[in-house]
Length: 180
Image (tube, rainbow, N blue to C red; front, side, top):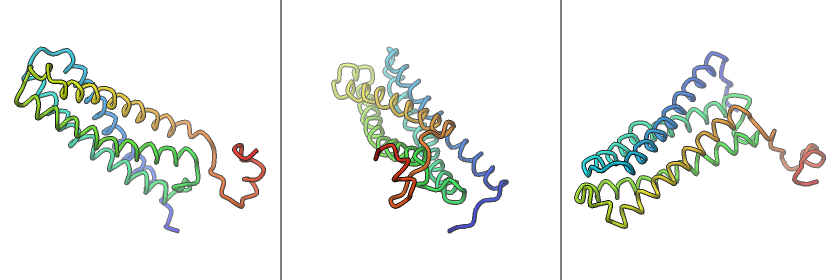
């Protein structure tokens, strides 16, 4: 087992973890604001610029935030008493984070399509069914991602559900609600 972090080291890793969380959530919130503004604009130039900025926010905030969050989360899990699989709340954060990262790749496809369509069509993109589909998917999936990110923060704060019970553990036979 690896050496545990000192309290000072743990605090610095936690600060980093929180900063990366802020980057990811801030980037997601900014993208939602952009997609709402896209629905309200009557400017073709703004349509293209907004989708281009969504891509920039993805590259500058969301991807580094997600990567930093995963790295700091792994270090904090492995080098503290929490562990990677000791608690249901940590496992749920890991699963949700993987879903968010994978779905981010899909969102990027829609952003790239919207950039390409609005580059050539500008405001006429509002008559293009492919663009309208991409725009709707960005709104729905972007909002869903932001909700999941906030849920992960809530899970981190509340730490619900207790410890993961391993097979063969006496607690599994007596306390596991799923086997009663």
